[in-house]
Amino acid sequence: MKQRTLGTSGLIVSEIGFGCMGLNFGYAKKLDRPNALAMIRAAFDRGFTLFDTAEVYGPFTNEELVGEALRPVRDQAVIATKFGFRIDPTTGAMGGLDSRPENIKAVAEASLKRLGVDVIDLFYQHRVDPAVPIEDVAGAVRDLISEGKVRHFGLSEPGGETVRKAHAVQPVSALQNEYSLWTRGPESNGILDVCEELGIGFVPYSPLGKGFLTGVMSSSTHLADSDFRKQLPRFTPDAMAKNQALVDLLRAIGDERGATPAQVALAWLLAQRPWIVPIPGTTRVDRLEENLGSANVALSAADLARITAAADAIVIEGERYPPALLAATGR
Image 1 (cartoon, rainbow, N blue to C red):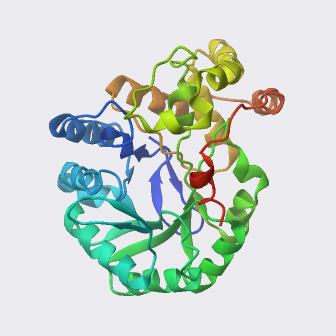
Image 2 (cartoon, rainbow, N blue to C red):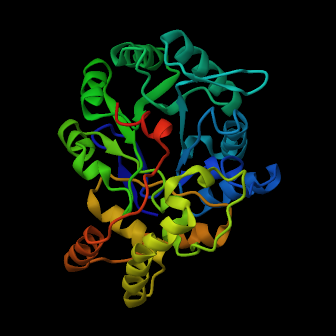
C-alpha cells in the first residue's frame, strides 16, 4: 500500500487506515478475541499501518486487542487512541466528558498499559470538553510528549477555532472528523481549511457512511437494538430509502470502472487532499481487501467533478447523529 504523511507532522502512515472500533464495539456483530486479533493481523499483512482505537471502545477491551495483535510488529505500526470521557474503571459506565489534565494523564497511563506499549503514536481528544479550556488540554498532551509517552496530538470533531487555540500550545498532527460523500461538513465548516492552513493531517472516520455507502444496506435492513446505528436518524427505513440515490450514484460510477460502491466512495475521499487518510473498519477479510482495492480506482478530474456535482444534487435525509450527540461536535 502507498503511504501518506499526515500534514507537516512527519507522521507517515498507510494511505488507508484501519478503524478497529467495530471489531467488538458499537455494532450487533462482534468478533470473538481470536477472530478480532486475526482481523487486525490480516490488515497489517495487507499493508495497513494506521490502527485506530479508543479507551471508550469496549470500554477498554478494544485497546487490549490492538495492543496484543500488533505487539510482534510494534515498530512498524502506528497506533492511535483517544481520551476525553469519564468511565468507571470497574463497571465501564459512562459519566460524561472529562478532559481535565489529570484525567488525560491518567488515561494515557492506562492506555499505555492496555496497549502494552511504551509510547502512544497519536493521542486524540475524543470530543471537546466545554468545561476545560482547550489550551489546558493541549498543555497536558504537550507534557506527555515531553515525557516520551505520546508522539503526536490529535483532536476529534472540534471546531476550527478550537483547533487554532490548541495548535498554538501544542502542534496538532491530525484531526479525526466524520467525512464521506454523505457527510461533507468538513468542506464547509472550516475544518479542511484549517488543516490546509496549519499543516494538519485529516483522518475521516466512517468514510463509508457506517456501512450504508457499501451498497449492502437498504430500507428493509433490520438493525438490532444492540447496533448503535439504530439510534441514528439516517438509518430509519424511510431515510435509507431516500438516501439510496447516493448509493445508486456510487454503483453507476463503479460499474464503469469495475469497482464497488465502497471503492468509489473511498477513492473519492483519497482524491480530495493528499493528506487525507480514511479509516474504514470491517470484520471481514474480503471487505478489507475491497477497501484496499479502492486505492487502485483511478478517478479523473472529470470523474470527480461528475461525482461531486451529482452528490450536490442529492438531499441527504436525516442528521448524522441525534441532537445530544450532534451537540458534542464542532465545538
